[in-house]
Length: 457
Image (cartoon, rainbow, N blue to C red; front, side, top):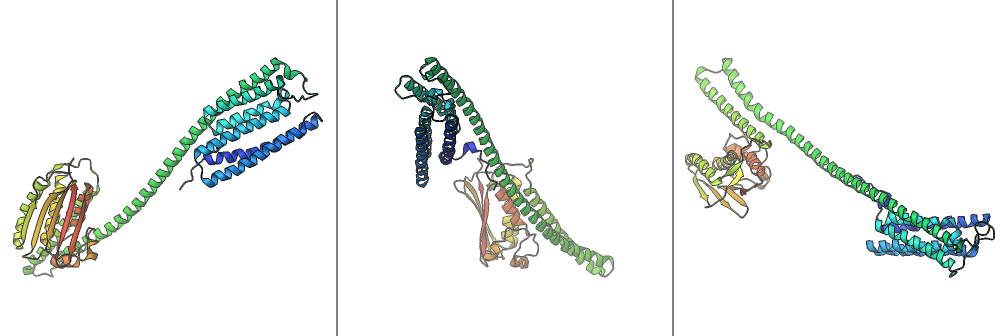
């Protein structure tokens, strides 16, 4: 199956804290490099012990975050735990940044824009509302630092040689720097969160397209398998049809050739012609069944489907079959339950269904036997049953009884004529209308064919 494509912005929630932790190690090394570089440019100006201690505390805090992240993974924490963990990391990071900026000169440091990093990170990992909250928190923390230094609640570390030592006590500078951060943080939150929202929407569309492609690929694979099966069935069907048609036609041609070549005396020609006629009739019956089978395999819009009274169709078929049953001295009876509802079908199909089942029962039942046809209903289906006391079938024969051209050896001995397509047509008819057909049989004791068709809505 195709691998689903993920955009880094939309990583699994459990991976986001780990991403922050990995990034924080880089930030700690970057801060250390920054401090060492600044100390080189402004020697003996920065409070190096305090700055290095701040960086060490920042790194220690990150190590604790790593341990807590491993614990969350081992507990398989909920998404809320991971979201709260992200909030905890961002808030503490901004506090560490405020302390770091305090030792780096407060108002005098140009690195107060580092707050924007956390605003953008919040926009990426959290909601749009959260990004604005962190923009406000960054502005509030830095403004508080400047006010505390202005009011001398906290000491101020002057960057001598870089800034004026009294600049931090001038309200105009406090206002200008604070306004600059605020005027930058909130637009940054807006633009970053908007871009992330659009990227997430694109990712969602990509995922949906990918899933749709996977579904289509699965459907195409199924269709391909089905086409391969159909091709195998078609090839087998053609071979079977060719075999069934070739032998009788060859026999008819042989009979006619014997007559044409003068090998058959005139007094025997009639018998040969009658044999040819029987073979021709067999072929006509086979061709008729093949056409019926082909029609059932095609979905034709002009097919006449309507509400059909199965009992009326059965009555018409049994009137025709009664004479055949009497010729074989069979006890033939029909039992129709009152009030059987109609089904939605083609009337000709229902007639074929009854005709094939009943004619088979009569054909393969010995004289003096019994054929019983019944029609009833259950809550959802109309149920038809044709039961006989004929030759029956063995269990291994039942598995093939609905296959094209299949006839048991006992059936061939008892009745030479037969295409082996009657029960295949029955099965196709029943299943084409959402029903099912099944058989129960015991060799030498008869068979019971049953079908169920959905009631007309």
